[in-house]
Image 1 (cartoon, rainbow, N blue to C red):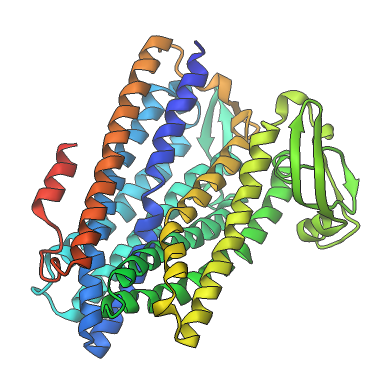
Image 2 (cartoon, one colour):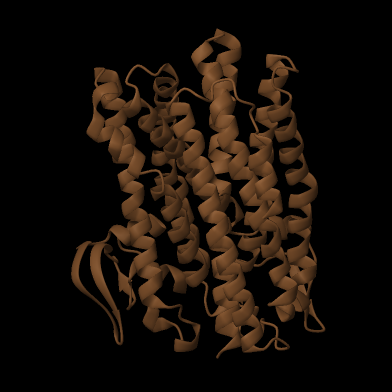
Length: 455
């Protein structure tokens, strides 16, 4: 067995599972900031109940996110020691900044928000959840900095086989940081909006007169529509333009452009094949890709054929993951747009079929986030640091295949159990709310947190 492939599979499992929880945490924290602020200003008891209920779900999601995030960082030393040796001096800086400048801010104020309820003033309660949202968003910034440096490295020089930092500013604000950060954060806000809207829809189907559920939908649907649009344009559009300028081989792969073209078409649908690279059953718009990438319908766009075979990413997976992400993005706009229309018409509260659609749409933004991550990481291959270090030269050679298989199997079992536990507790809390049993329950139940800590 190939230790490189096994190590890549293990890291993909760990980061893929972990990445289910930060988008919900970020999006839900900002929505709760709105909820708590409106409750403070209006003294609306339904908004008070809404904040109290979703605070429990935020606590649960944050706990599982932390539990899955910490082991992931140990991978760099265990499975990717050669990577750490070459670029660890640079890569470690944003990870340290994330812990010191963001995680402590987020976790500290989350404790105050959860356990200080009814012990601090409403103003301080709003400030606490605001700091949680700021901390979670700042945490995402430093993680994106680290990953963006791998995509478009800057502010460094190679000396004695190691990357040495020459400009912290250039490394942090490398050519892809801002575009990738804004796109990722808006995607997280969409995830939080569908999370709240879907749960609100479930509660409303159980009780059409539930004021808490109505408030959840009144806040999450306009919020979700706004950020569903923003995640496509301008943030997604600008991110694609950045990829076209700085990672042309990835851009060619995600767009299915296998030969260089002037006035390159935008592929709306196709069936990709890799040997030889070709698209079948294409539906495309002539010149649109050139215009979107470079602002000129006649601009040339480089195709895959211009790059050596050993520098091309996996074509099928890069193309399919990107286009499915785009399809989901269009669905988010349509679903939230229709929800807003139904709300304006006064029919949302009784539209049981559409409420069911919102419930089933809860995991879709998370699927889009996973597809976006796959597009970004698979599209960078065969490099782990673009143009600096190949993935095949970065894994730990001291590990054996049986050792990695054992750890991969162990993490798989643990994450299946942890994921099952999260869903079980989430469903339990939502059903308790639907039955009216949780209005005055503590925000963070000790037995739930103790189970997560034990895991």
